[in-house]
Length: 292
Image (tube, rainbow, N blue to C red):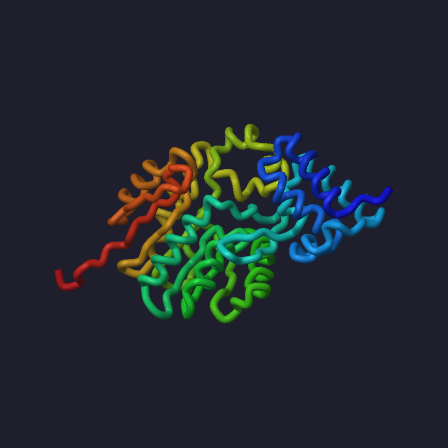
C-alpha cells in the first residue's frame, strides 16, 4: 500500500535517529523533499498525500547513501549559512554553524571600516563567509580567493544565486604563498584555513573524512601551517589599521595569537563560540606615525 509523505518522513527520521544521525528530524525532511522534488513549504502542505512508488524508491536510495556516511548537504546540493542558501558539493567544505561566529565578527569589522570597505575571504571554499559579509554590509567589496578552481566555480555559482555580483569577485590565490601581484590592499582579511593536524584526519567522522575535500581539512603536522603562512606573508594585503580574522580549531587559539604577535600584529583578541570554544582570533596591522 502506498505511504503518505508523513509516513515516509516519520520512517526516515526513525532510521536516521537509530543510526545516530545528529539532526534526524531536519535531515529526514530534507531527504523527503529531495526525493519528491518538493519545496519545504509544499512538503508540509502535502503530508497527508500518498507518495508514488518512484518517490519511495528515490528516497530509499538517498537514505542508503546517507547511512553510509554521505552528508545530507551533498545529497541536497545546498546548505543554509547566515541567512544565505549556498550551493555545496564535494569540492568544498559544508558550512558549519561554528563558522557563523567568524562571519559575525567579519561583518562587524567591515561595518567599522566604513563605506566601500574592501574584504578578502582567503581559503574561501564555498564563499560562505565572504558572501555573508557582502550580503550584510551594503556597498562593501569582497574578493573570494582559493587555490582550488573547483571551489571557485562553486563560489561563482553562489555569487550569482544570491544576487551579489555587484559586490563580489573570485580570484585564484594560494594562502601558502605571498599575495599575487596587483591584488591591492584590504581593510579586512578573513580566513578559515585547513587546520586539522594531518595525523588526526584518519580519526575524523567518516562523513567528513571520506566525503569532504582533504585539501580543505589538512593543516599540516600540527594544524598550523596555514596560520604561519598567512601571518608571515599576507600582512602586505592589509592596509594600516586593517584586521586579519581567523577561524581556529579546538586548542589552537593561543598558538595563533603568538603567531600574530610574532609577525607584528597588534590588538589581538579571541572570541568563544556558543560551545565555549575559542573559535575566532583577530589581529590588527598597527597604524604607524610616518613622521616619527
